[in-house]
Amino acid sequence: MRQAGLRLRRKHRTTIPDPAAAKAANLIGRDFTAAVVNTKYVDDITYLPLVGGKFLYLATVIDLASRRLVGWAIADHTLASRPRGWKTPAEASNEQLQLLQQTGVATTG
Image 1 (tube, helix red, strand yellow):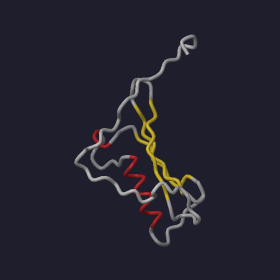
Image 2 (cartoon, rainbow, N blue to C red; image 1 turned 90 degrees about the vertical axis):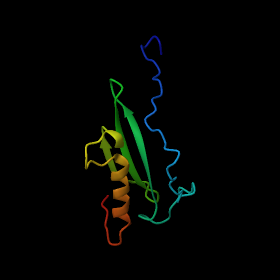
Image 3 (cartoon, rainbow, N blue to C red; image 1 turned 180 degrees about the vertical axis):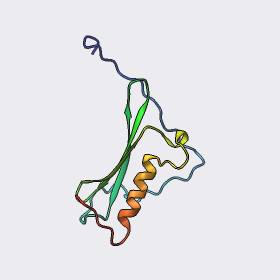
Image 4 (cartoon, rainbow, N blue to C red; image 1 turned 120 degrees about the vertical axis):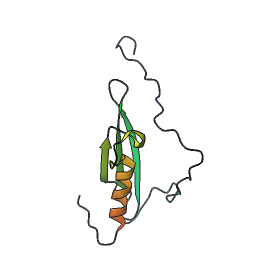
């Protein structure tokens, strides 16, 4: 790595949990299987490092039965630094999940 001019990046802590905040319920129970499409979803936020120590935040939602990407959002800010009215990737992800869980909502793909 030294010869190629590569170096390991120091881990950057982007989230500091509030110890007083309520924990989200684990509805999956580590069972990442689903027999029917549009019945079980998972989401994740990935921090993408940029030059200069900044990040992009990518939130994704995946249907566990089809293993297909259902929705995604990307932003250059987190909750603490966003302008009024903007959604974080997690909020956009949760909104997408709520829309998909409503009766009669169709998806494409």
